[in-house]
Length: 501
Ligand SMILES: *[C@@H]1O[C@H](CO)[C@@H](O)[C@H](O)[C@H]1NC(C)=O
Image 1 (cartoon, rainbow, N blue to C red):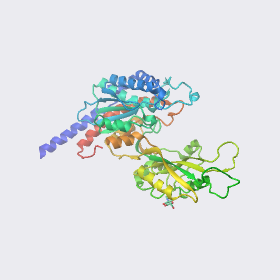
Image 2: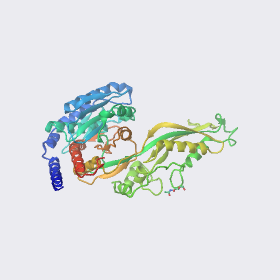
Image 3: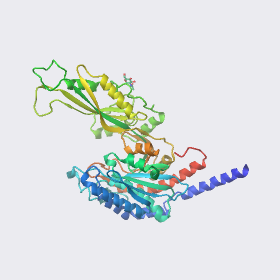
Image 4: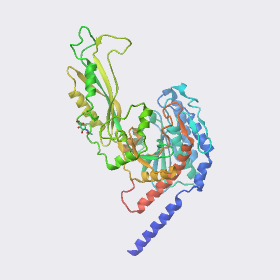
C-alpha cells in the first residue's frame, strides 16, 4: 500500500518539523513575556506569602480561607476555567482547569498553599509573614518568609506559566488541571477523600508536582522513587509496679535491661534487620539503581561533617546513598522508662517503652511489615518480660515509577536545557503522601518538578527562595508544557502502543 506509507511518512515528517517549530526559543514572545514581568511575579509571591496559612494551627483557619480565595482569584486572572474550592472537613483544595488542547495530553499539576508554623520566632531575621525580596544583579538574591519556597513560590510558577501561554497565544499546548492542597504540612489527611470524590474531575494522563526541589543551582534531577514507612511502640513490663531496688533488686527482671536487650537484637552484626520476613518483597537492586546512586553528586565526607557524624554507618554491602534510597530501615526513635528526674531514686522500674519507625522500599507491604514485627515482638520477649506491641499512626507505601515515560523524558530534557548539565535520576529516602495517593486513587504516578533548593531553610526560620530558581522554574514550566506535547506527539507517531505512560 504505497500511497498509505507515503502519506504516513509525509505526516510524520510534517509533525517532526512542527514539533521543532513549536519548541520555544529565547526570542519567543512567550518567554519574553515571562521574563519581562518579574515585578508582577514578585508581587504574586509577596502577596501570597503574607497570608499566614498554617494548617496545623486552628487559629489560622481564616488565613487558610484567605489563601485559598487568593488562589481562586489568581487562577481566574491567569485565564483558567471552572476555578473553585474542593471542600473537605477542614482546609479546602483549590481547583482550576484549561481543557481546550484537543488531542493533547492532560496534565494534573499539584501544589500546596498551606505552610509550617514559624517558631522559634526569635531566630527569624525578618518577620515570617512580612515577606521580602532582594534582587541583586542578574538573578541573585532571595525571597525570605514562611512558605516562599515550600510551596507558595513553587505553585505560582506553573500558574504564571499557564498565564503566559494564555496571554501570548490564547492557548496552552496541553490540557491542564490544577489541584492546590491546603493540608500537605499536616500529612494530607483528606487528600484521599478529595481524589475519590472528584475522580473524574481530576482524571489526567500524567501529574506534575510543583512541590519539590533540585539538587543545587547548577544540577537538576528527576525523582523516581520514595521510601514508605510504618511506626509502632514496644512496651516491656516485668513487675506490677516500681519496686525498692534495695529490697527486691537483683531478684526480678529489670524492664529497661530487657528492652535494651530486645532492641540490640533487632539488628544483625552486619547492620541488617534481624526480623523474619522483614525483607519480603524488597526489590533486587539493579545495575541501573547502583549506577544512579554512584553518579549522584554527593560528597560523603563533607556531609558527614555537616551532620556532626563521626562517619557513615549502616548495613554492610551498600553505599550511603544506596542505604538511604534502596534499603529499608528500622530505627528506634525514642526509648524511656524508670526514673528520669534529677538525682537518684533507688527503684527497679516496672515498665520501659521504645518507639520504633521503619522506612520501607518497593515492594514491601507496610501491613505485612507491621505484622511480621508484631509476630517478632510476640516471640522474642527476654526472660520474665511481657512485651506489648502497639501500632503508631504512620503508614506510607513505598513509591516507584518507571524511568521511561512521556513526563520523565520531557522533564529530563527541559531540566537539561535549563540547567545546562546532565540530569540525574534518583530516589528519595523520605515519604511524600500525595505521590502514593495519586498512584493508588487516580492511577497516575506524579513527577516532581519543583525548584526549591536544599539550602532554602524549609520548615525552619528564615525560609528563603532564590530569585534565580523562581525565574528559572517559571521558564522551565513553560518549556515543560510544550515538551510534554512534543513527547506525546513523538510517542504517538513512533507507533508504539502503550508507550505513553
Ligand atoms: C547480614 O547478616 C544476616 C544474618 O547473619 C544475613 O542473613 C545477611 O545476608 C547478611 N547481609 C549481608 C549484606 O551480608
